[in-house]
Image (cartoon, rainbow, N blue to C red; front, top):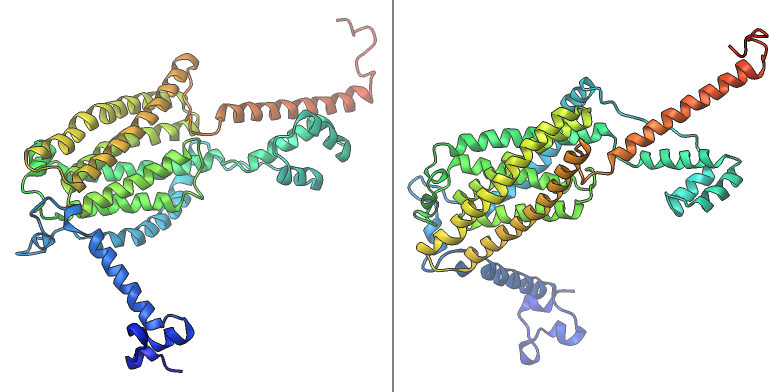
Length: 420
């Protein structure tokens, strides 16, 4: 049956006869309505009053005379590049990070336990940390000692935790990216006048052409953060997991917005200031997982100095001054100016949170002479558990030896020499 709307036939009040007879929308009409709504939303979203200063039009930012200007469509490529980075990361961790970890003496630990259906069912459906009463009852059911049940649950919990090799691989990958992107950023910025004179950031804004170095700097950084978002489910979950999600999404939102509004010059400065401290953090974590505590402490102190200098001095008194105060000498406040600075202030709030965590780690280092990532699961507890297992294994061997050696052959020591 043909659609009545195709024949341009209408009923009362100009409504299609199909709608009047059946009460159903014509697919063609519904599709046309959806397209109109999308076009209306698109026109509203890309309204010049949201993105550009007054009197500036999108037509002013069209390519001309060999000059290229930013376009929102440029950002589509960051998704396939993010997937490419995830593939590169897989091979990097397998062929670079793993051999490096092995060279440091870090190997994949396999926590093996004897299968037990009763304990496994309790672990999955009740709790992974049974109370003393639960342990007593499970020991009776399984014909085991309470210590054996506790040890079974302790090892079973470890099977769900990331091992040191996984942590090392993740830090090694991030260290490599941050190192490469920081070196690239320094190479891109060293001869740019706005890196030394902040007034140059706003000269001729927004009619500032896009440089190829800025394009690749932005695209690489955004692709990396998209890859981190895509790998959140498989990466190691730490105490600041939610803060990390907010950080990644805020970073992508900030970079996307600054790109579309052509805040490229200030955006490159923000990215460089943030990347330069992350190198030291990831390197400190790598040496921590390798057991090089003194090297880890030194690198962490360097990281703390760089972090507090870059995030609490350079960022608020240089970057925020550049984006919040200087534009007012050229322009009146407009929407994108307000939204940009709002995002930067949220980012500064995250700096305060991470600064608090760093101070906790510094406090721990000063009073315990040991640094560990407070965002991670407690590694000291893992080490204590490993030592306890080794001690238990040693004791069981000694007991077995005493039973076999002295229990079955009590007269190995000559008479009269027991008291010597």
